[in-house]
Length: 215
Image (cartoon, rainbow, N blue to C red; front, side, top):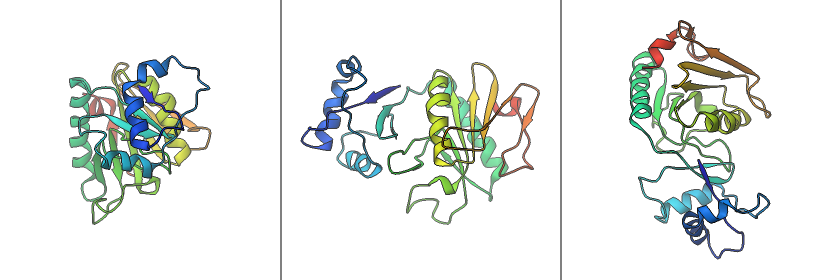
């Protein structure tokens, strides 16, 4: 993962972001105390509307930083496809399954979790981006991004009050279930190992075995 940073005296948001994009390697060598531009969600949307990023750019906003996400490999993509079908089949009429779509956590964070189970809504979130109150479950699929997902994204989800988040650990073959959010992180972590089952808090009747989830 890479974070795009910029000096506050740049003449415009778009110019600053463009400079940061092309000068990322040099900035990575700077001191951690270097000034950084913290984007709001509104400014982030302005950058998108300006055409600075195209549809192939994998960028999300987290804690005011523009974060370049890892490219999606076939194993990761296949796992997300499998989980999408599994969740749609088991929550039809009870939840909306969003795939790699934005969730606005606060004024400075709009990540794109691999999967989200959302409260049903007639407009399917066309009129506004989901917020923590709309989220029943967030799922991140980790192959090369496990440390980032665990140490950064799960903490951000906890601070935002997301009631439950899962980390599907492909390399280890288990599911990390995070519950009881707090400003310091999730208070409860359970590793669901092969041979065990787990049910989302929102759907206690849905018992999923690890072998059903990880394919």
